[in-house]
Image (cartoon, rainbow, N blue to C red):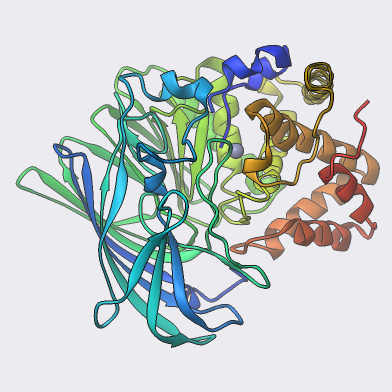
Length: 490
Ligand SMILES: [Zn+2]
């Protein structure tokens, strides 16, 4: 995700609170599969869904229960974990508070299964399996569900211009060896998500008055009785999302066999220019990091309270972002296709991994593409000054500053603290590392990380070990002192 603060980040930390908007290289056939049939009724604002999950046990443990995240329940009226911070409520709910949820209607294998809703925000579906599923075995579970959308400018919800369907279906929780299933709830900071790559086959039925932008490859399209149905498929993606709008105007180009679509609104006059930024971003990251592995990417303007949001093959760009900031958000969100999309991580507990790499990749993009007029050194200096100012202000106001980068989302005290420690400090850390070990070794390490951990989830330890392997330097102390907040930024 990208908060809207980019250019202004360089001005002052004091105004930040006002401006914030917010798989081992497994064989495809051995991945879990999601088959979903979805139907959106726009009069009721309800998405009806049937989901068949073929869970393939890639872990070393046997399981008698499986857990699914029910992220739409974060939009309930009495949810304890808010979906936006209090400073963003007006932007998120321009027409007043509105609530949504997910109802689980039925869970079955061959027969009905026992299941219950758990978690402090009814955010977990716990399914008791009919038998223990051992490593390398699979089981098919069917879930019938209904999602009521809230009127909110968010990842999931309807707004003035678009209807956003992000994190809308029951998605399997990740099992961490030695820890258990990761069942963290929603949080207004960051992207509180964590999932494994899987294969998807999805059909979506919706009123033909809408156009759709979606993850996955379009297989078929049909229209009948004013309703459109599409079938899409994709292998090795870690989530599926789509956006509907009556206002979309699409522009398309092909770059290195990747079809890139920019979805703007009908009245927009800068669509070609934005598409050109998308092409530059994909081309630059293909060269700098490694090839984008899918054959399409959709960049979609939408009503969204934060700057942007990443999903596999689909990114949201907030229609509130304008001018140069829009290019910055586009580049940052596209960088997430490499960091989050292909190389994944636990975004709740280690958000700095994908946000830090995406943000630093964004600076690398502007360094490579001087036509955008953003100077790399000036950006690093501005990030550094901004961080120092944050430290000074927090020390003055609260008497201390918590500069730890690696902590769960609920352990950041404020949104500015989260932004400074996760985005800003990561950029300063990677710049410092690059200066220390040199450009060639640094870029080798970035390429190796991408190549060696594609379709997997990486931990902080994996990232550090990968950098050590690639460079030959013992960087454990370097990374740990940054992550623990021990480095004094001068
Ligand atoms: Zn981001």
